[in-house]
Length: 170
Ligand SMILES: [Zn+2]
Image 1 (tube, rainbow, N blue to C red):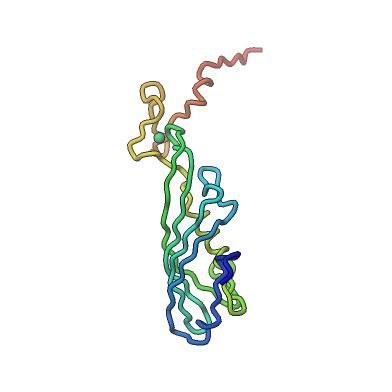
Image 2: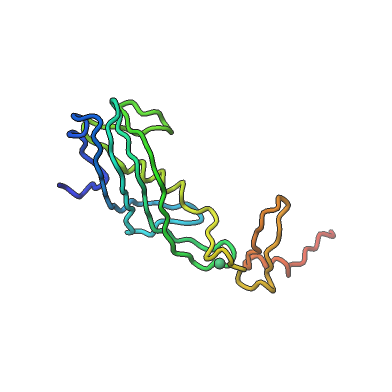
């Protein structure tokens, strides 16, 4: 089996025997899995562990995607390394519905678009090093409560702004 495109899965046999279920396990490096707050380290493999099943004319992929990620703690700004597992149940069909189902090719499915979308949605928007993280220096930069009640941490990089004097008399 070629491993140059590990997320391309041949399903010729599956399509001949609707109703059969098959375990598929793949690891692959997927480039550019990043949002502003977190990313999958380059070279880090994403793991797909799933059951593939033909239902009618469609292929259903059920299982989990696991990936490592790095980001900056939203409170103390230290770098955070962690991993996440996301459960998936996705439908692949000949004429996919954009945003809902994925393309079923001619005897093959490419899992990469599903992996990409799933990981990008699952990367944390506001990583924390620990739930209890108090920030870099709680005495000087206490967490403050925003108008909507959400707790936000004072970014120490903004502290310099406190020392600025604005002179708006002209
Ligand atoms: Zn922290």
